[in-house]
Amino acid sequence: MYNLMIPAELKSWVDTVNVAGKTFKYTAEGPVGLANGKKVLHLQANGGVYGAQDPATVYMSAIFNFIGSDFRQIAVEGHAYDPGKTEELLAEFIKKVELEAQTF
Image (cartoon, rainbow, N blue to C red):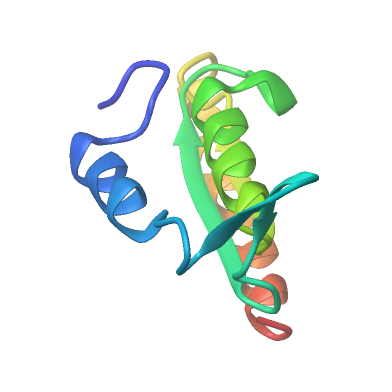
């Protein structure tokens, strides 16, 4: 379980791949992403319901949009509030992931 952020190992990887001159460059107008055409799909399970305000998703979106990639996110949320709905929520999540995978 990670509260409000991503695992340290993922953060380390993000820091490794975000390199000036490789995944972004500095210009007179500001930084420009060089990872255009690259897709990122962030899958996450949240016991609570955060929607677009989930800190991990906000962080991941900012990082991958900064380098110019096509960032998408799918989350399953709220299963801690109603454990009886966990299987239903996971089934919906899996359907969304399978649908996204068809165009990924």
